[in-house]
Picture 1 (spheres, rainbow, N blue to C red):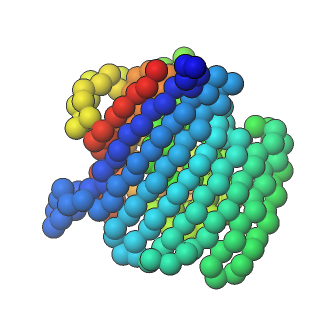
Picture 2 (cartoon, rainbow, N blue to C red):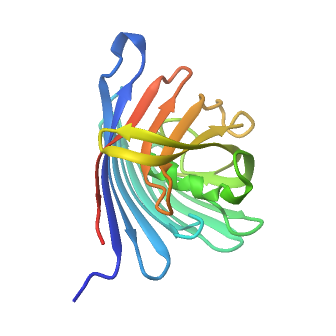
Length: 242
C-alpha cells in the first residue's frame, strides 16, 4: 500500500554569533513534519541547547495545515540534566486547556476562555517558528500584522520553564521574498521578523529575523536572534518525501 501522508524531515544547527564564540555550535534540533490527508500537520521535534543550564525538549504538536492553528500538544522538558516538566495541551474553538506536572510545584491545570480559534501555540522548536509565519496574510503584501492572542508553553526565551499556557500577542513583519543559501541547499525564501513582544513577555525578546521556504510548507531555513542572545539557526539537512 502506498503512503498517504507527506513527510518532511530536517536537522537544524544552533550556533553563537557572539564575537568571542562566533560560529561555535550551541545546540541542535531534529524535526519531522507529517502532513496528513485530513488536513492536519503533526510536528515532532527533539531540541537540545548546550548553554548552561542545558535544555532538552521533546515536542509533538498537531495543527491545521491551512493556518497552523493548534489542535493539541504534548511535551517533556529537562533543564540542567534534570526533569523540569511535562504536559498536554488541547485547544477547542473557545478554550485552551493545559494539564502539566512541574518539578518544583507538582501538577497544574489551566483553562483559558478564548475569543475564537487560537492562531498559534509556541512550544519552542525552531522549526515551529517558521510554521508560525502561516498566520501572516500574504495577500496583504509586505508590512506588519499583529496577532493579539496566541499561547506559549514558556515565557522564557529559551523555553526552559514549564510547560504551561502563557498568553500574549506579537507582530509579524513580512520583509519580502529572497534567494537564500543554507547548508541544506539554495531556496526561494520568505523573510519575516517577529516584533512587539515587549507588552507580552516578562523580558522583551531580542530582534528576530527568520527565513522559511516560499511555498505552502513553510519549512524553516534560517533565523538570527540579535540583542543579548546573538544566536543563529540554520537548516543543515532536509528530506522531503512524497
